[in-house]
Image 1: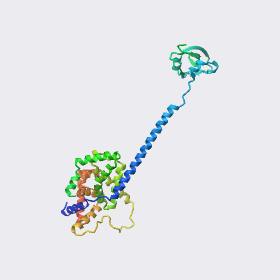
Image 2: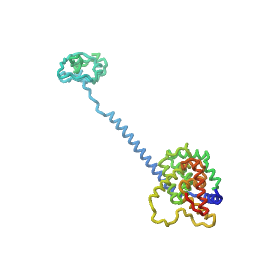
Image 3: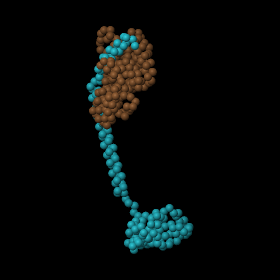
Image 4: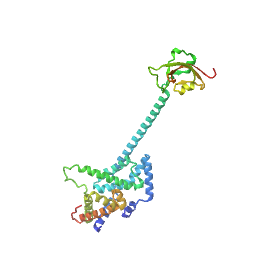
Length: 156
Length: 195
């Protein structure tokens, strides 16, 4: 670098060493900082309120959703069973009877646990209870539907 | 501030680096005082850089404001592993100025007979005249040369720091600086130059 340029650069450097932005810049920048911080806070409140509302909705849904009524209520059956009012309940996941197929209705005693295992919704507190039921048996010997007649617990 | 003081400031001591990290951490947590401190520590070099790059105090103030507003909106963009906060902010300033130049190029002024934005206050004497010429010459340099002159010669940044700001190799900074000084010397001597 030649001397004249070096001297000019040094003087320019010294001149501008104390240069600083006007005070208005700092005020404007800090105002922007405050604005952004306020917005972030309000966003945080919105998010928190949303989360609370969502969790309350989930709790409400789980707590107050309508309970599916069991197709067969053992309590009701044990008190008053009238065959004509009890419909046959198809056993789930079994091929239904064909229109041409013959079927037999067999009255038998089955463990309630077996009915539950077959997918029938039963409500009983006694795991060893047994039920008297009419069972629709197809030509192939498979049970297709069940009609509950009565339930007896082990104590009875 | 003496040249030596500026030179020392160019190579940031560890204490200042730690201070900046602490300030940034608090700033990220929403601490207003930390941000104010960051502004007060770093706005001067940013303002000087933008002032030299634009040759206009008003534009420089606007650009400085833009830099710190940008920092507010992008607090996570600075990676302390990659360099110093001061150099990073100057780099942001350079990018914002480049964007502004690009936008301004789309508009043609009606009247160019107004005051030259690079014109300094009236001065007298050979040396003062040299400063005036130097300001004008710097303002007339192509951006890539102007940036390295401002960073290396006026802000006393090292070649490595300047390379980080202008995002090029150290060798490129050296060659640009050499070329820029040659252009400035010609301007100062009253000869025309072709960049």
